[in-house]
Amino acid sequence: NAGVTQTPKFQVLKTGQSMTLQCAQDMNHNSMYWYRQDPGMGLRLIYYSASEGTTDKGEVPNGYNVSRLNKREFSLRLESAAPSQTSVYFCASSEMGGEAFFGQGTRLTVV
Amino acid sequence: KNQVEQSPQSLIILEGKNCTLQCNYTVSPFSNLRWYKQDTGRGPVSLTIMTFSENTKSNGRYTATLDADTKQSSLHITASQLSDSASYICVVTGTYKYIFGTGTRLKVLA
Image (cartoon, rainbow over all chains, first blue to last red; front, side):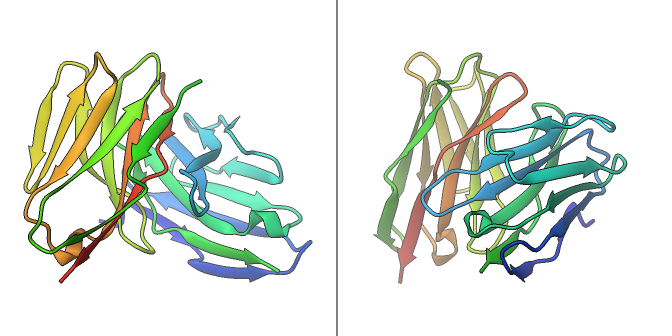
């Protein structure tokens, strides 16, 4: 009963490098989300996918891209990492408006 | 603007004591309100959900209240335990969107 699984858990990147954060859920949810969490701030929505085949920008989409690979998987890509993207990233899934279930988070540091 | 504000930002209490966390929101339309607990280094986990018609809901030692008229909610923790040390996040669901508060960081001391 894994719920929402994110990989990796920790990552250090150099400025300008690229990487993809992976997320998979096994609850058959239609909606999936990517958030970032910074000290003193609430979770901020980067991108979301209301259903398979659709993606939409959230509050802070600049510098990120996403792919809803199938119903289970939703990945977040940083094309050219910047120090401002140092954060903890959370993937979540839900039925629309229902309880959001979160992954364990990815702690990303960009140096 | 849709906003969720929580107070206090942080709180330190002794084990066994009670505490109350506050949440004020200006989200419209309102669908429901949830309190999440986030342990250090983990993702948030839902504690309770409150819909428009509900005033009080309990989950063990956690009791949430909702006043939809004043747009306020509280989370009361009874007989605190060391394991209650965490951040507590108020989340209001609007039209298919979650609006997150910044959280209250609770520290329970032995």
